Length: 251
Image (cartoon, rainbow, N blue to C red; front, side):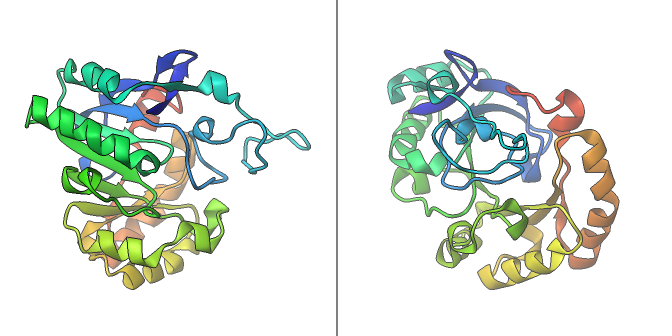
């Protein structure tokens, strides 16, 4: 499987508190997989997809000089067996696969989760996904929780790429899934309402999160976003890890 790294040769596997959504504050082991099928202009893990030789824009780009990452330095390949061995030795049994987009590797992911649950049924497995790929096989059957984060127009992705109605409806019908939507501006709330309505997700399973990579950016958006959640019956989520550790890898 292809993973991101905290530094060359060191896979990004770390024990921390979940900072977002329904599991916020829970001790978890994160496994960051590399590669993504979307390319959000504000993404804080662009090192998983914004590689040299690509032409995707990002807000960290300097004028006339796009910031690109060296794929060879930013990724590491581990076998399913090797990754399972690393995770089985972790004392924390809540494992969160994040990215990138983990479901791009769902065949291997399903095999990995099966190995983990065979070793210890107490493993709780969460997948963080952008909601464009429907899980199948073991990756659908053995996952305990889907943290689905569909992207709005401000992400910079074309509508046809970022919104897959059938896939979002699939997640809406699955009680294991919650929507976590990044909001940057009050005008985004109209788009949120349409997305939630179209996919049929109940408000009780919708979490709105302010966009931001610093405590200052988050605080500037939290007051009006919290009020919007109260009015609509949505859940509000902060980005706890940003306040605790900053915008850094491995946290």
